[in-house]
Image 1 (cartoon, rainbow over the protein chains, first blue to last red):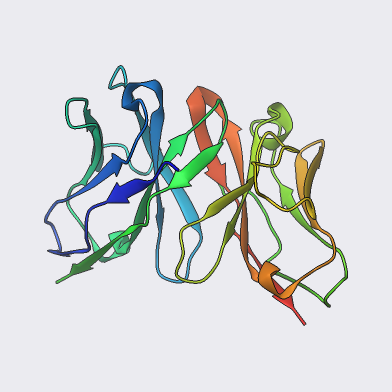
Image 2 (image 1 turned 135 degrees about the vertical axis):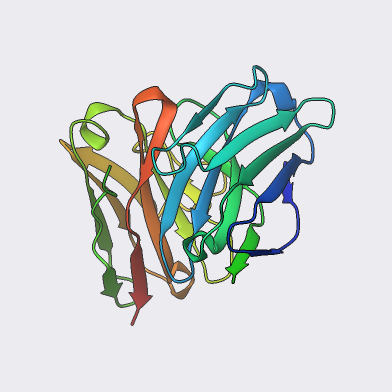
Length: 119
Length: 110
């Protein structure tokens, strides 16, 4: 069964940057698109964008545009999300998930990475 | 772009059926047959339970069903069980392979 394994929790200062990784356990990495979603404490899910595992092409939500970057390393079969100029509003659990087909067929999901931003 | 509109909470007794609505627009829910539903238990990652409006992934109970009419999608849980108590999120495809989530609905089994 395919799993997505994310990097561990991060604590960062306001204004700093953070990078979260997402590594699939077993599938042809280049055949799928990885989406990123976050969830602030006690809040709902917010879609952030995607990176195509094969082409490396990306798309960011309007809110995430200019604040973060999605990349992938095909040799390591790992996807990355980097978020810049952190504020307290970026404190959240960040999830990666695989898009299996066109549309939000997001399955499976990573275990989530808690990013805590403090001053 | 505003989140899709879901009721904040829905409750029901064991064995009953409940329906969660997900209201969008012609740019998302109404424009594509690509609506998914996710179930999230406390402290856990979301789990896909419905995709392409009506389809269930392998292993998902047939007590869960999805539908859509116009700009509103719905998730129905039949024969409510204690294990169904969780948060539920709808999600729609929009242009350029983007996605938008609903605000989430907390389901309580009385």
